[in-house]
Length: 70
Image (cartoon, rainbow, N blue to C red; front, side, top):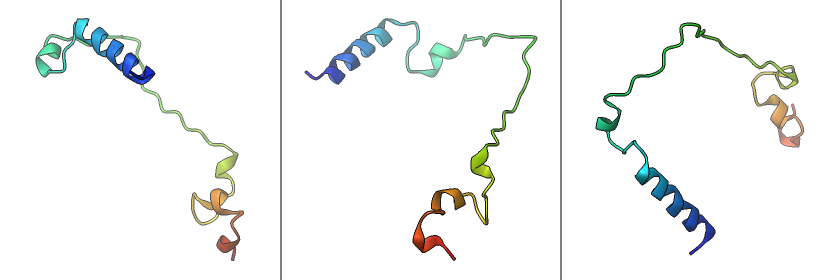
């Protein structure tokens, strides 16, 4: 038995003992937690990779390939 198979067996045993089963009935009584202070946010990452966006977003990836030059 490989190490991956051992870990998979352990994971399956833990899942079998747990409160949730792989069916919709298990989650029918589940209530998600409510946080009255929750906020919606969007994160935009704008880094140096976006500066040389010449013609398309793949410019910085292809700029050192000889066949891509004009």
